[in-house]
Length: 313
Image (cartoon, helix red, strand yellow):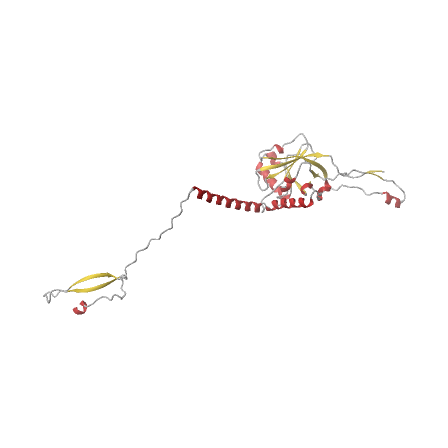
């Protein structure tokens, strides 16, 4: 039994629980036939499969950033930000810019040809009609001339032939103006702007002495349900000498543009009453922003349209 144990050696190819080392037992020779008959054994651990050391991954050193590199990176970021902002700005105000582009193309193609709405400002000379009464019915039919009658819209409107705009004018209650509740007044005006341009509360009506103020959108949020959110986008195309027509209670009032200017939003002088009669149009500028206000001032002119022919019997 001892001999078998002494001759035992661990198979180097045998799996063992240590995995990486095999055990070999060897007998250490002693003086022959000692009384103690003791055998001493030594344990040797042989590493058959040494664990490879982990190799360190060599990282590529980052290039040092100098002033030129920093400026280059910053300029790229600025350019990308400007491009993204420009795309978003055009998308938000696409309708207004489309109207402006369409107007410029039509103006280039048509030249100085009058617009459809020019008829509202054309001068018409009142005529005097004389009716000759006769007992002969056939003679009466022949002698009755065609009557020249002016027909006005059923609602209040402003017509600007230069930019081919025929817009309803919406009135807003002056109740919040009297209360000096500016936030509520602004809410009323924004709500009314969905239905047209707004006659600013507290200012004169056409035919009254003083300042008639009308305001409208040049551009507004695309998701707004109103149909009139960019009707004054073309107001920038109006020039001095252009004619504007207002219809109030089916009565016509004609104005001619005499001054165009840009003011800050804090400049409320344009809303105040004036000793002279005038029409003041207000919208935001530049288009798509509310940084400033475009002001168009027009003065009244004599009514050129005959209401009806004078009939004398």
